[in-house]
Structures are given as C-alpha cells and as structure tokens.
Length: 536
Image 1 (cartoon, rainbow, N blue to C red):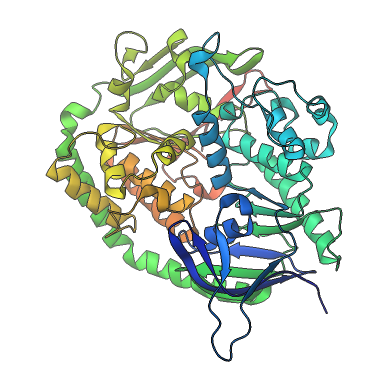
Image 2 (cartoon, rainbow, N blue to C red):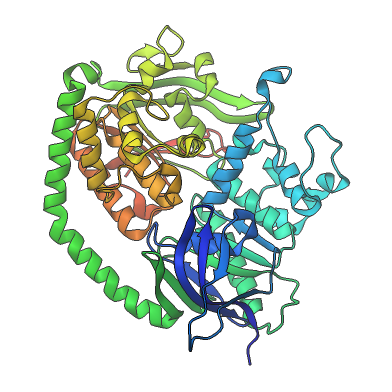
C-alpha cells in the first residue's frame, strides 16, 4: 500500500479570525505529484498556507459525529516545509521595508539583507544585522542550487533592490539549499523570463519524477506541491489535481480526469465572455465618460502629444549599470510593450517615469513637457499617472486594513490609502468600478483579507479609475486566475480604445500582450546597445 505523507480527514482550516475552510478531506501519498488550482479567493491559498507552519494557519479536526471516520490531521513533513510564492515574496519585501534603517546609516542607504545573507539563513537561521557573516556566506557561489536558480550575479544585491523575477529565484534557491522535505511552489513561473521558466519547468519534472519513483520519505530530494493560478505550463510529472472554489474542494482526482472537466469549463467560460462582451464594453465606456467629466479631461490631458522624452539616460549603482545611453520617446496613443530578461532594468525604467527612482534627477528626462527637477513635484507627475506595480502592491499590503472602496478612491488622489473626504461622485464611481471588476457589494471588505490575486485586481481598478494619460502596468496580471485575467485584459483593451490613456506594459507572458501594443522596447543588459526599439 502506498505510504501516506499528508492526511487530512474531516478537518477545518482556521486563521486568527476563525475558520476559512469549514471542512476538508485530502490525502497525499508517496508516488503522487499534486497540483493545487482554483479561482482567486476560492481557498487554495489558505490550503497551502496551512501546510506551512510559518504562515500561522491551523488545521484542526472537526467534532466527530456518530458514524463518521475519526477526524485527524497527520503530516510527516512537520515543520520541514518551505514556500515559494508571490505572497511569500511580498511578505519578505514588506519585512525589509519595516526593518529599513537608512535614516541611521552613514550615507543614508540601508540595503538590508542581501541575497547571499538571505539564502544562507536557510541553513543557519536569522543572521543578526551587523554581525560577522558565517563561513557559508562566502561559499554560496559554488552551490549547485544557487547555479540552478541563476542568482550568482545578484547574491550581493539587497533584496529590496531585486526585480520580481530575481526575488522569486532567490526564494527558490533558499528553499532548495534549506534541505526542507516539502516545497510548496505557488505560481512559480509568474514574473520569470523564458529562460528561467524553462529551467524551473525542467527542475520540477526532474524532482517530481524522482518522487514518483520513491515510495519512501527518506529521499535526498524534496517533495513538491505545485499551485497555479491558471491551467497552463503544467509539468508532465503532475499526476493529481485538487481544485478549490468558494472555500470548498470543487475537484479532487487524477490529472486526466481534471483535464476533461477543465476543457468543458473553459469552453463555457469563453462562450459566456463572448456573449457578454458587448454589454461589458458599453459599461466600461459609460464609466470612462463619467470619470472624464469628474477629472475635467480638457485640463487633465497634456497639451503636447509627447508624453515622455528620455535623452542619453544612464542609471546604475556601484559597478552595476542598469540602463546605458537610452534614448526613447513616448507619444500619446502609442501603447508600448516593455520586455527583457529578469534584471534587465524594466522596473527601473518604469520608476524613472513614476518618480520612484531618484536618478531621474541626474538625467535628461521630460515628462508631460517638463524636465524632472525643474520645479514640479512627484505629485504633479503622479496626478497624471495610473500605476500598477509590485512596489505599489507591497506598500498597500503594509496598510492592510483599507476598505476596498477606499483603495479605489485613492486612485483619484494618488495616495496609498485615503486621507481626505471623497466626493459623492468619487464614491459612486468607486462602487461601479468594483462591480465592473467582479467585486460588487464588497466595498467594505478589507484589502488585507483578500488573496494576492484579488488584491492585484483591485489595484488595477484603482489605476484605471481616473482614466489617466499614462498607465504604468508592471506585470499587472500576477496572481490572477484565468477568469479574472481575461476580464482585466479585456478591460485594458477597452480603456486603450477610449483614446484617453496610453499604456506602458511590462510582461513576460506572451498571451498577456495587448493587441493595441504595437511598439516594443526590448532591454538587453549584456549587449551594446542595451536596448532595441521594435514594431509588432
């Protein structure tokens, strides 16, 4: 008989506020490779977090009823569990921000933990800031796990200065080097470039293939449970699928059985999308027209068609040059796709426009006709921007308890949180945008209680709410399930068609490239020149 590794029988999952999944029965046996899937907010995130003691959720047996099997929870992995996820990455960056001591450091910059220190902590535990580094730190460059994840070049960079893809690979390197027995990989391909995705897919199939042949729990390789937001790029080694929806298990069985059901569900969803598209488009246009009246678009839109102009831009720190001799112009109505490998400077490029990178002041960069540093404030610039980014997401998570309607209304005021009384018109518009995104009637819910994907969807609505002249989209679909992703991409196409907003869009996912994006800025850090301007 196959050995049971995790067994949950008639249990519930609780967080500090109470039950999040009322009843759960599931078993993972040796020789199985599991995929966890389901819509945003459906329960899969809570299920995975409950398996990792670091997240603080509990799996508790329900009261036994007459005739029932005995409720129980048995997990052979115990605390030897490590999670790699967007949620884990966001928590890590949030922790680094909270522990930042730049105001007390000579030179005014506290880089925080480096990738080298963070990965080493997977073996030796937390390393106190300022203390002598253990010998292992100097040896990491030679570790096969570090080479596999391709993080050798960023080991000495601060975690908070890494791109989304870089920090995901750093988390994976730490998970592998920690020798934990169970790895929970949640949407591991999000934010990774094509090369990194290929390496990770090969890694999963190799490790999963070994665990399929191993009927013991003493393998030198970790067990892996994979979670995905969408049923794409599923490794061949997956044998079983568990799906969550509305806080319950909606499917539990073999991969082959799930694929048959998924095909029918996807076909039905696509048919419903096509049937409802005209109504959706009319709603978006009506909302857009109303918002333009609120903002006074005749005063809100720039006078010139040149929205951004960069001349011989150079950005870097220390010996690391991120952007070199970049010349680029953004004209109104020209929607751009920004692409390149992880760490190529895409986020840095975007932050020169948003004002979140201070090297904008040492370069010749004009935004809406004014050179940065010529007297305008960052708020003068952000008033005309809609922003969806990893940085914004982390900052909003640090607030946590903001109501969803307040998150949307803060888009009118360019603030993280809402600190001034909104107008009745803004409040009405916020409720309509929430309904448009599938959050109707949920305006009083707390942002911090949403799943990572739901949070990202709300931030996209926040960025769109004022129909800004420029909308910065830095990996906007991270964490979105298939249904929400399709809705958001449709929404963005319709906003582009309105003619009021010009997009700058970073994504590694070809299926997320918008039809309106005819211009491409491609960054290649190891080439000269390091950028290419293409048409598609």
